[in-house]
Structure formats: C-alpha cells, structure tokens
Image 1 (cartoon, rainbow, N blue to C red):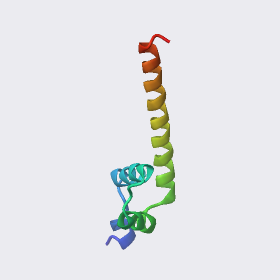
Image 2 (cartoon, rainbow, N blue to C red; image 1 turned 135 degrees about the vertical axis):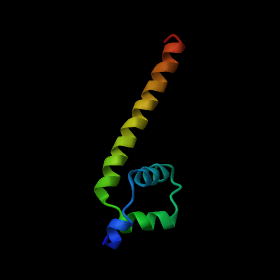
Image 3 (cartoon, helix red, strand yellow; image 1 turned 60 degrees about the vertical axis):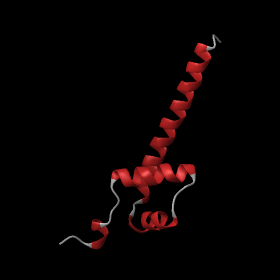
Length: 72
C-alpha cells in the first residue's frame, strides 16, 4: 500500500512549473502550500539553480546575438 506522502509527491514537471511560477511571482497560495507540504527542498533548489543557469545563458546568448547583428 502506498502511503499518503508518496501518493502526493510532486512530479518533475510539477516542481518545474512551481519554480517557473515562483520566478515570475505568480505562484498560487494553494500550490505553494502543496509544495511545502509534499515537496522536498532539495528538488526545488536543484531545479531552481538549473532554471537560473539556463535563464542567464539565454540572456547572454541573446545579448551576444544582438551585439553581433549590430556590428559591435
């Protein structure tokens, strides 16, 4: 039999969605409470760091592209 915590543990996509929503500041209170109740902090930290690195690299790439197209 599956206990209650394993049954409601968030999936990878749920954690990713929560991290992205919190980065934009649009996380609902219900979802935040669910994350704090059933999620593991390590999941959110790792995915949060990964999303931050991808965001920084995307901005860097976009700026590099614009600078190259501008001839600078």
